[in-house]
Every structure is written in structure tokens, then in C-alpha cells.
Image (cartoon, rainbow, N blue to C red):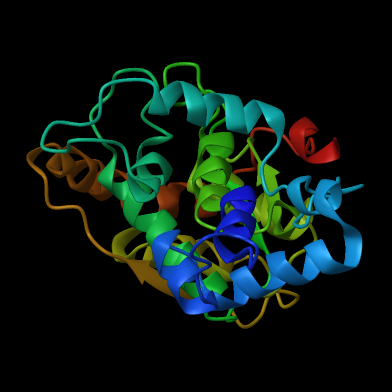
Length: 257
């Protein structure tokens, strides 16, 4: 395009274009035309037609090579039913869905809520807790991180805990392993209530615990989760009565990289 602009505005040509005419002809701005012409006058033809090589990317990469590879692999598959092609939002929401599973609305809505708080500046960092082998052998917390990074959350602001096998493990490990004593629990309301109740029994060092309710899933499959919640609430009292401990106090190895 730069060569065409120079030829178009060449005053030695038969019908040189004005800056505005060249901008319209090559679908660019008048400022770009002026910069191309100025560069030719200051630095010559070769410099004008060749881009200056950058020593480093203008913006630091927000995803690692393995995350990028997974997103590319997903984008190369057929888009979900009802969509003509993959969009950035679809890729972010479906990056968890890499084993042929149906979309996990609880997952997607929690990611939505975390994104909202982060971009609003309410939270500065995110501890992602979950079962590292829950999604048919796929690391759940890594999937969550992939989705958040794809939505613009800085990977440096994310800490992973793949040992959060149960809600009890999640809240106890947040306090005793990751030394977090004040935080916002991001999940659906029924889960937030249970997590906050457990956290309040961890002692006086824990304070200012809040819940941010993600949207509730309303699909036919979600009823299984709500049924399971009744049993989970009964188990909360049993855990407190027996001083139940987390499965492990080991720190997530993925967080140590």
C-alpha cells in the first residue's frame, strides 16, 4: 500500500492525487498518507517501503505458548451449533470444553463474574481453586485461567490452587496455605453461602469475607448440581463437628513455576 500511495501522490505523474483522494482510494486515513510521504522525503524509498524491525513486541504477550496452542486447536474445530464461526468470546467461554462435554454454565457464569470484578477494579488478583483432575483428566483451574486470560485478565494476577477438591479444602487452603485472610468468594449464591459459612469458622484472623454471586445456571442438567447442594450443606455441619482437615496442605506445583 505504501508504494501505491507514493505513486498516487507523485507530482511527476500524469494525474497526481491529493492527500484526501489517496486516503479514499486506498481505504486509509489522510494522516497515514502524509506520514508515508514524509517518510519518503526524510528517509528515502527503501526505508518507506520496509517496516522497522522491533526489538520486542509492542505489547507483552498475555498468554503462554501452550495456552495459545490450545486456543488455536479449538478455533480449528467446527463452531458450536447456531454459530457460523468462532468468536473471541466463544473461544474464551468454550476453552474449558475440550473433551466433548456440554457447556458448563456454572463455569462460564463464574468466569463472567470474575471478569466483571477484575475489570471494575474491585479485585486485583484472583486465586483459582478447584480440582486439578475434575474435567475428565483436564486441569479445571488451568481451564479457568485460560478463559480469564483470553478475556483480558493479566496472567500475573492469577494464582492457581488445583488442590481445592472440596469447598472445605478451598477456603481452608486459601487462609492457611496461601495466607489470604480477607477475600471475595466468586461463585453462585448457594455455593457462596456455604463457603462463607465455612470460612467464618476458621478463627479471628479471617475477616471481611464477601460473596459475589454469579448468575445461576438454569439448564436441565443444572438440577443435578442443586440436588447435590442439599447433601453438601449437611456435610458442612459434619465437617465442622469433626474438625475435618483438607486433603492436603501442599501448595499447587503449577503455582510454583
